[in-house]
Amino acid sequence: MAEKSEFDAFASARWGSLVRTAYLLTRDQGHAEDLVQEALTKLWFAWDRVDGDPGPYARRILVTTYASWRRRRWWSELVSERVGELPAPSSDTVTDVDMWTAIGRLPRGQRAVLVLRYFEDLTESETAETLGCTIGTVKSQHAKALRRLRMARIGSEPNQEAQA
Image (cartoon, rainbow, N blue to C red; front, top):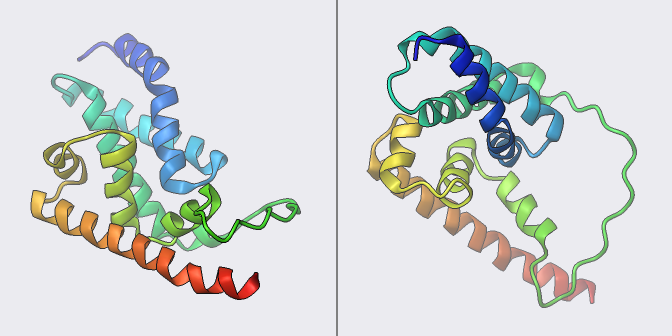
């Protein structure tokens, strides 16, 4: 993969899917695009060392860069415009907003596992390779994430009924 022109073709072809993955991790379009740009910059410098399909390598750079971004102090800075109120959810259904909020509260490792397993459709072994951990870690993070999402759902039911 020594040709930099191949990198340009790869970056153009994979931009959309990388931004989608980054958006699922960051929950912000601007941060997602910044994350992909930083990941592609790192990939460009390592392009000569990439052997085989660069897709998994790019995805790993994206996830590890996201993890390091979460540790930076400035990440908590949020610039936004005033947003209108969200519609109230019905008492018997979980809305996309409820689920998205619950996923957003997961620790970064658990969120990364869910994004890679369900949205990127990776196997447990591919997810472990992408995250640089064992399959057992992927399984335990997956189980913990699902448990937390279930608990968030159970915890939200009484509040919704009390409001009705």
